[in-house]
Image: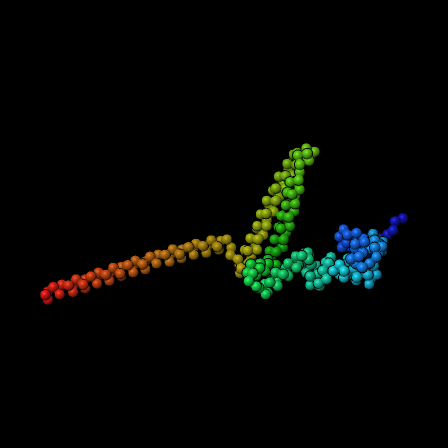
Length: 256
């Protein structure tokens, strides 16, 4: 009868194996400061470490003991990162990127694009349309994977299939992909339409364009009128000056 392995031992073994990352037992043993035999026991699921050794493994691998025991899926030793990962269900890399953006937003340097990225991210995460956008994006990811899978089909693969079925799969996959892109576009539009404080709707933008363009026409007409009035005033002044000169010349002629 085979040896029964507990859920805790299986979890530890799986995570220990992942942390080993293809290194030999000897290499990993040297890294951890343990014997090669001990590492072999852990990697093969034959033994669990005691508390002291568990802490040593966690410290050397820069993970938490909770991660090694399966109490959390986050490897990070930083509590705020672990909480964010567990709350949002995102990777540690994503959390660190979010944190970086947030820090640069609070203490902006000359990188205006980073500051604007932080503001855009804040709008997205606080939007009621976030769930819809996430679902649409997930749909697009799935559809893209299916398109990639179909791309790998060779002529030989297709010859072994029902071609009518294969053609239908191709049509369905492409149709689903286009629908997914449309869903994502509409989700983003929903975000913009639902946040009138920060975004302008397409209809409002058209109205703004037309009104602004009309104001430009009005300003151009007023400028033209002002130019015309100035020209008329200049012409009147010139005529008046000429008249005065002529009158002065006439008077001088009479005196002579």
